[in-house]
Amino acid sequence: MFLAAPMPESKDGDGTEGILWMLVSPNNRPLGRGTTYHETYSSCRQSVLDLQANCDRVKPVETTVELTGQWSWRIELDGESVAVSSRSYLRARECAYNLERFLEAVPKAEVVAGTRSVRRGRRRAVVAETPPRLGRELRNAG
Image 1 (tube, one colour):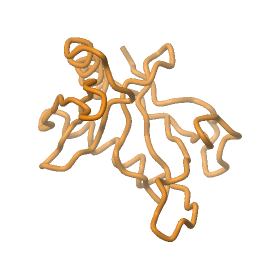
Image 2 (cartoon, rainbow, N blue to C red):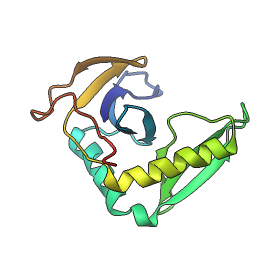
Image 3 (tube, rainbow, N blue to C red):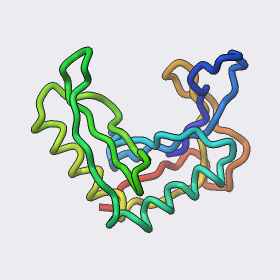
Image 4 (cartoon, helix red, strand yellow):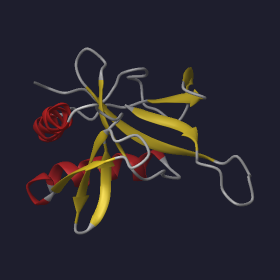
């Protein structure tokens, strides 16, 4: 799934939107998301294809969130964080399990056309810069 979403507040507070990718399971459960907001759909899509092409070189990192003590994960490629967990987990084993599901899904995921525009966690209309298969998501193929 490609999401057009407001970027985190910048110093000038201009409210700029960027495109972020998210990997979801066949039942629409978020498995993980990209770490970078992209200016264009094509650059966001390319970052997903690059991750798939290099999934044998990624380094998974599990860590705790200092404020809550909960667990989260991230994926690094060449020392740069490229994906993170969609949420935090109460237990280390839950974090490890969900990280494994993400890593299994990445190479098999179908990259499909279309973006969704979101505001404050709610979906809005589909963005116009998409080919005919609107509303379809990046889905785990297996």
